[in-house]
Length: 310
Image (tube, rainbow, N blue to C red):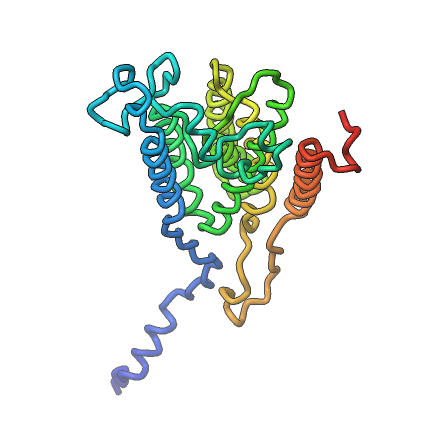
């Protein structure tokens, strides 16, 4: 007797046995969605608008039209090169609109100048250099960390730069003003460095990225040694941004997955959100920032607890 031909049910069972078993799904968190940068472009527009308004208030032809640069610009023309080589307004105009000056801040109590000076620029050259840096650095940071953290970083780093500049001006005898967003921009650079250090585990080419960043920072710091450049604002802003980065730019450690992204059947080990060294660096940076800002304001306004500090 011949064998019974295999039924369709037997053939289906044979196919199932022949199929290789599927590997378990790989646990991988969804990639973070980049933020749409809008705050940094607004800061850019605001700085340009403030400079245009500054030139409108300056009105060089009303003083001496024959000495103005580019007189066809009418009241937007620039002061003579001898007075302002950066193609900008007169010092008195900047002082009127909120430039940083030691006497006005310390003795007249005009502390608002610590923030207003961040939005003023000495000339077209000054504005162009700062705004290019803002776009190249700020947009990338806002895409990764969002407008809240980068906005907070920008303002606090700029305040740190203003404190450093004012403390430096207290040691000078001649009346000098300081303007520009350089303190805030150096704060962004400092935050990029601390962000790399505190999130060390998630980067691939760590040493290369660190070396490139250090070279960029060193080149920008070297500009501060040029004549009429306020390097104290650069250093103050950089230090403020560096320590702020340890606090507000910390990321989850490599391999961390939120529980909502884990399958319900997963019973493996779950990594904590942050490593221990991240908590240590963040806590230490917070203490240093509190002490630093307290010391700066104490030196400016003579808090009794800090009055006798050197």
